Image 1 (tube, helix red, strand yellow):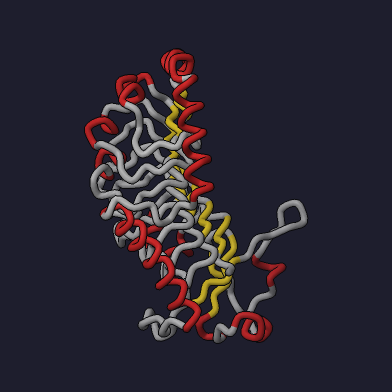
Image 2 (cartoon, helix red, strand yellow; image 1 turned 135 degrees about the vertical axis):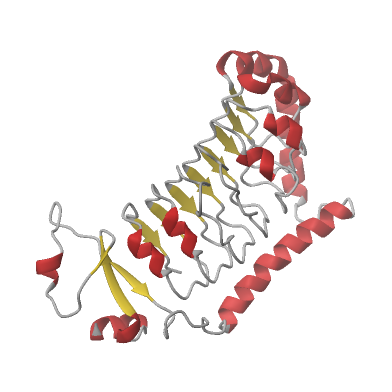
Length: 295
């Protein structure tokens, strides 16, 4: 425990070691409590906030700068879109997007035929501000919708709701600042297993309601402008199938204790945030195998 204090700065009274969801006893040797598998064992350090859940420490200058940077990114995107400007995109990016859009249009007929046959809709780097109506017209035939790296700011909720058989939806690398307009349509998709929303400017992830995302296994929100996650993230019935959560590169100061209620959650990537403590409820998350907090 003294070595951990030197390495992490966490006081002994606030240190807890976890192995396979169980809290290790400080006065017993590790060998008596942990049985390595394949010569290796995974042990997590849980640092409580001290005093039984007191207020977290004040943000450092670096943490405050990170939070301000994320918030500024979201504000700048929103302002640019409101004024009809493109302040976040260079002339080279515009030229690349224009070429991609021209190539996309030239092959549109062939693409449309393939989409209908396979159910896999590929719109990667197509220079799009919105999803073509031809795609939405496919409705329940769509199984995969990949819109990675375009300039899409939102999706029409009624059209999203019609994607009842979509399993993977990628909206990463776009201009999304808010999920409010179409979040509930996303959350109600019965077959959705993968939702990729990384590298946007999302400031708020709305609270899911019971029954939301019934089959969602992977949610990636890395590289956005999040300062918190909803308290009801894993409570009740939502997110019961969630296995992997990515929230790295945001401005989070904590993780909601309710995440420990997600029965299948086995990996959380929360690197490059400002997190100061791990919820004690994570000790009961027996399936959790990987919790990344460095940086």
